[in-house]
Amino acid sequence: MQQEILSKGKRNKRAITDMVYAIDAAVYKDKIKIFRSIPEQKKISVLIEVSDYSEKTILKFLRDNEIVELVEKAESDDAVEILEHLEGRRRRRILNLISKEKKNKVVKLLRYAPDTAGGVMQSEIIVVNKKDTVKEALEKIRAPHIKIRFNNIYVLDRNGKLVGVVSLKNLIRANRYKKIYEIMRKNVISVHPKMDQEKVARIFRSHRLYSLPVVDGEERLLGRITYDDIIDIVEEEIQEDIYKTVGLRKDEDIFDPVRKVLKGRATWLILNLFTAFLAAATVSIFEGTLEKVIVLAVFMPVVAGMGGNAGTQTLTVVIRGIAIGRFKFKDYKKVVIKEVFLGFMNGVITGILGAAIAIMMGASAFIGLVIFLAMIVNLINAGISGTIIPVILRKLGQDPALGSGIILTTFTDVIGFLSYLGIATILINVFHLF
Image 1: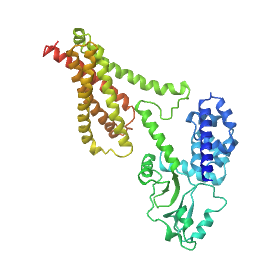
Image 2: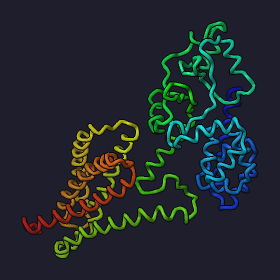
Image 3: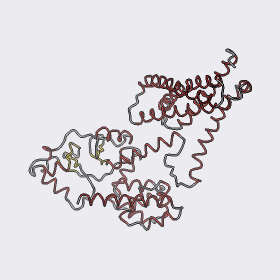
């Protein structure tokens, strides 16, 4: 029986995934046609999973009464997401059309920013009084109007303050005549509604939770955040960090139309163009050296490219460390020293290999020596830049991932060319090695 339920759940999830793909991949006006053909019981699940562009497009074509129906059926956090994708005037109109009970729930949640605990929580929760008996609590949770999935029941005192939590498993197994306060767990981990969703995700991960209560300043229960919401948040944060490092909008989707994507991409590419000219200006300083040894130009991209790759490795680890709270600012000197040593060792290894390959390609020992020395310098620079750039951005109050990839590439390109051509110039003019 359990296998049948799991199999059905997997088939249902696969069906929703297929519907989401079909809508996202469809052209503008076909999105609403596909959505309207979806079975009623799956529409909400599909709507909250499609890309932001698809969701806004669908909501634009839906009639007010269709949106009202969706909002009424959706859990409060999903209802809020739907409303947040409506423009202000239409949102107010929909709020006036939905039931008073639903309106009270969603209006409270709309007060919170989308990326906070309050913005992702749902107000549907199962609560019992600490002086209830187990029998009374079981009767409450079996009430016909309770349709949400849950595994924890929150325990309140007479003033509505959160004082404990009891798992559904423990409640079912307990003596029916025991009081709830006798079987509840008192030390409840909770969060406040204005806490950033990234911190909420860390609490879930560190304490291995399935749900987390949200309380106000007086410890009154406001709602709960569920594990599936946190999975969505973690996915969003990972995507956002990856996108930001290369200057993309956090909500960009592969099927978004050109006009929606162009502005965001073009802005960062123009910035990248200016940084590329900065690297070109660095090369122009050494025109004399390049005229003497024209073959130097062949291997310039090798040193710059290796620096970029090494720097990206460091950058990724540091940004992740900051995101999950593992990287503290007091530790940055220790990390820089480690990355300098690592850059030196990698520089020696790749420098020897690079020099050997260049010589096998017909280059002189002089070129091999330049590649070897420049590789060490640029990989040390890559380690330092990959650590310092996100730290500085964070100190300036910016997201450490914001454009850090472009900034890093500028540093590794400029220092790579500077070290490569600078070392060659010194070896030629000072040591007369060529």
